[in-house]
Image (tube, rainbow, N blue to C red; front, side, top):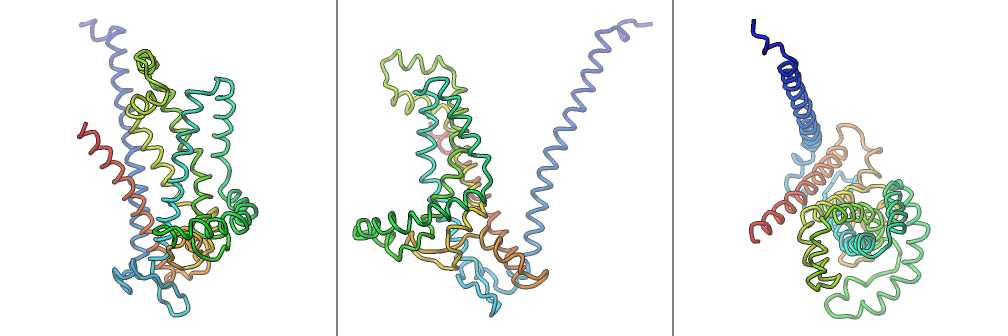
Length: 320
């Protein structure tokens, strides 16, 4: 009898091998479940949108009319509002989030950084409807009484960018929507940046300081190149949140199916349009199908932003 086959070490190896196989099966099933869930959502949205695309064709994407009375629907206005507010939010949030992350990791003391970092994480947990209520009660009157009149009298007269800041100061509009989204996504982006900056090996920064670099040079030449992939991932996380945000933007954007180049113009987004009109849509109606088609376009936009970010990172990595 071969005793080596029944020795404790051999039995341990068998158990370890079985455990690895079970673990690998579990994680494969988890990954497949995510893919199946995502594919199922896309399939459901596409199937529900078939009536709108069959009726209006590709013109549904570029048509800016949305008239439930005449049963004429187009997604151009909500798509335009979604892209404009999301880009405004990212443009406002990324510099602020970057400054917060650098201050917490490079300048503030450990005690202060811990307290402020915790408060920022708590801000990320605030429900979006609270941001919407705050924006409608505080930000909209402030924009209507102070910011928009001042911007109209100053920036509205500047050649080139003047049309962006002209219009009646309603308080609601694309600019206000972008600002409320920026407040919402800043905690997400800054939290990711902070964690990435903290995980950087200290020897890299110490070596740079030892060579005589200033703090800004260390951030620009050492920290940002080392953490570029994760920083872009955090920005994409915030952009995804901005693209799909519903209640906060519904309170402050004005909810008008309108395409205007003024940042003060009221508009809507795909998410706000669906939130307002989906409960009033009969199952199987053309309006219901059009809302499903708008949701399908939103998923495509989110997927497109992710693909673009991956391609951008890959191009930069190849160029180094």
